[in-house]
Each structure stands twice: as structure tokens, then as C-alpha cells.
Image (cartoon, rainbow over all chains, first blue to last red; front, side):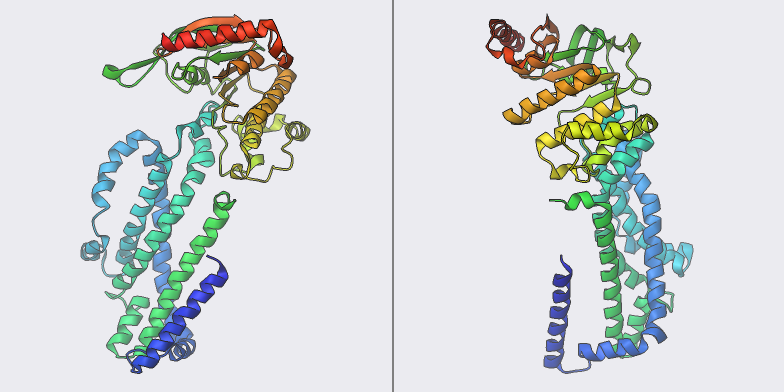
Length: 245
Length: 250
């Protein structure tokens, strides 16, 4: 999607919101202008600190999931022995709804940041492991032959084949996981914290401050969009070969 | 010299083993090209993989200069049918990959690289990716990669078979001229009789699975594109066609 298309999408969405708010004409749905004014007046006083907490949680869990998930996915994809041992565990653990583990994780790690990060980690981690493993399985044997016949080390094979071949699916898995992770982030932040966009939105809702509530939703959405765009930009740079012709 | 001594290779598990090569013995002298021809499924590619050290064999041996094939010690240039270019690397990185892995970067001079890419006519493609190239151009890049490496042996699996007839002839010429500069010991698998006669000093005919050597022919027409009309050419081509047919029906 080109920049201009994205901009048009945003404009269309705001126009629709405006129209709806004019039709409904109740505090339940404030106009986008009111929300924008509110954001600009309270962003640095109150929203910013919540946003940084949320960003910290999601980015840290993302980094941890990549550090652990990527090597594990590579191992499962490349070494049949590792696949045989790990596949049943991953297969059984993957479908468990991670959000349902929140009470257990909270009992074990407390209600602070640790439990939230662990839950987000679990969501992204499995997506990465499975995507990277499948990407490596999909590499034709012939791709390895010129390297193996040169006596290439595992390190050579990783750098020249496994890593670049798995990148596109890796980024796709990040995108998919990110959408879920942001929803779950919202949910986890409604427990045991007074910081985070989830807390901010629910708090505004309980105080019946709809304009603030909408401000929170807009900022959280913008955060998600920014993360998406960040992944897009990195992917375009890292997988340039995918975008030729 | 590349030698196969009573080589047997099979695929699959114990109770459902499929023998791909049965008791194959061939010697390919140092500095010569051997063309291997035979019907589909005769184990031509398996023979190359054995020479490249990519597969285990059941018995017998595959030797390079009397030593068992070992990709870590010998320098083996392997060109698979699909050229083996990495789609994520530019042409330049693809060409340099083999020498980098073999840690021969220091012995490769910039002028050598420039001369080679110029000879192959790919000097303007160096920053492109394989997906942006035609089949013939990809083939040239693959040739640049193996010839820059200056390998002890060169193994090519039907290198020109997916090209159109005109491009194929061009590539055969380019291969011959590159080969004449360095005389690397080469095995080339092909399913074209004409190609075997043009590019094989020795032509080896394999039979259908399990692959066995049914003929080994010394070819005096090697490298001679104008031999097409000669009686000797006709006789050899006819004989090879017959042998391949025999191998298929064996």
C-alpha cells in the first residue's frame, strides 16, 4: 500500500466517524475534532506515560520472543532430531489460548509487568517458531547443494540460506502476532496496574469521560499502526529481493 | 582424476530400498570433461551428488585424485539444474559466495572478477537480483560463480536443459571457452545427445534404474560445432541414441 492510499484510508475513516457522531449526536460518540483537541491538550500530561508503559511491554516481549523463537524455529526447521523432540511440545502448546493462562502467570509472577510481558511473549513466540520452521522446511534441497558441496559450515548455511529464506515468513508472523498482542496487551493492562493504555481507556470509561476514552482508543490504535509500519519498513529493507519485478 | 569404483547407492529405508546406482566404475582423467547421458531416472544426478559428497553410498567409493570425496578438503564446484542462485543475494554476492565460503577471498583479484564477468557479459547486472534476470543470464551468473572458484572438479547437472535452443548454443560456447582457459576436471550430466557429443571428451551412457554403465565412449568430436554434417557425427549420434534407448528399455 502506498503512502497516499494509507492517508486516504485515514481520511475516509475520520469522515465516517464524523458523520456517525453528527447523526448520533450524543456524548457516547464525540466528534473526532473534540477527541483530537483532547489528545493535544492532555497527551503529554497523562497519555504519554501510559503509552510508554504499553510500548515498553510490547517491545520487550517482542524482542524476547525473537531472541528465543528464531533460533528455536531454525533448529526445528533444519535439524530433524530437534524437530522430533520439540514438535509435539509446540504442537500441543500452540492452540492453548495464551490469554487463558493469565491467571496462572499472575499467580506465579505477580500482577506486575512480568506477567504481562510473559503473556505477550507467548503469543508472539509461537507464531515466530512455527513460521520460521515452516519457511525452512519449504527451502528446496537443491538450494543447499552448492553450499554443502563446498563444505559449508552450519554458520555459512545459516547466514547464506536459512536466515534470508525465513525472513519473509518471519515478518508475516510478526504482523499477525502483533495484532493479537495489542488486543491482549489491552486486556492485561486492565489488571494490577495504573499504567498503560488499557488502564487509561478503562479508567476513562469508568469515569464516564467518553472523550478521554476515545482519545485512549485513538492513541492505542495509532500505536498499533506505528508498529505495523515499522515492521513494513524493516521488511522492505531486509527483503528487498522480494520486491523486485 | 575423478574415480568411481564399484559405487552402489540406494535411497529409502531398509525394507523398501530403491537402488539408484549399481556397481558403477568410471575414471575421468584430470583436466577432461565427461558427459553422462541416459534415460530419465537412471541415476545421473545421483552420480553427481556422490561425486559432490552430498550423499552416502552403500558400497564402493567416489574418489577425487585417489582420495575419498570430502567437501571440506577438496574444492568442488557444483551447479544444480536450477542454477543454485540465492534469490536473496544480488548477482555480485551470488558470484562471490563460493569463494567466501571457501575462504579464498584473498586469492581472488579484482581484475579476475572483472575479466570473468566481462567475458560472460554480465558486468551490468551485478547489482540485480536473480528474479530480475532471464534464464540465460542466471546461467551465466552460475558459471561465473563456479569458474571464479577455480575448483578441483566441476559437476554440472543438466546445466543448459531449461534454456531455449539458441541460448543453449550460446551457453555451450561460453562454457567451452571458459573451460579451455582452466581445464578443470568436469562431469556434465545431460539428456541431449548433441550436447554430449559437443561437450564430452568422454561420453558415459547409463541404463535405467538401477543405473549401470552400459557404454564409455572416447569422443574425438569434442568441442567441434561444425562436425554436425560429418559422417562420424551421424554414426556417433545414432549409436548414442540407440544406447540410450537400450538403457531405457533395459
